[in-house]
Image (cartoon, rainbow, N blue to C red; front, top):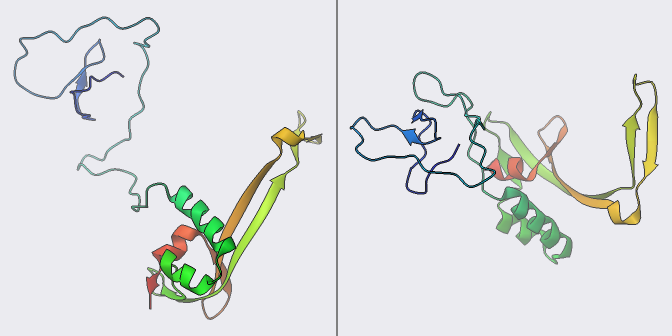
Length: 171
């Protein structure tokens, strides 16, 4: 749907045939119709997040840091090259001893960094009984880094993501 730059988003607004939203109750003495450039999709429907009848979102999400993937990438690069991993973890907000929301106390044992490279692809044949194996040309080989924080909870070890480790409350 198209909204003008001066029209704020309102999920409860009534949309006109031209795609404009009108959520206010006062009468309109001005026209909202205008022509769209060639290729403008007038019939396109925008998916909306459903809301419960009491005004809250159906899906409650825990707030998380914007661009966390970029922060995590910077952490991996910096951690690989640091001469003082202990101070680096402190600066990054990773607790050595932390408490989860359920009250469990965790103790940091290891920071696990890994690198993997995708060298080929597998494609299932129709019917699913076999696979096609295709090595990738050098230009399509991709590398990725993995990061895990290995904590001990008193009974077993567990791997936490960067975001999960930062969410622990320091003890």
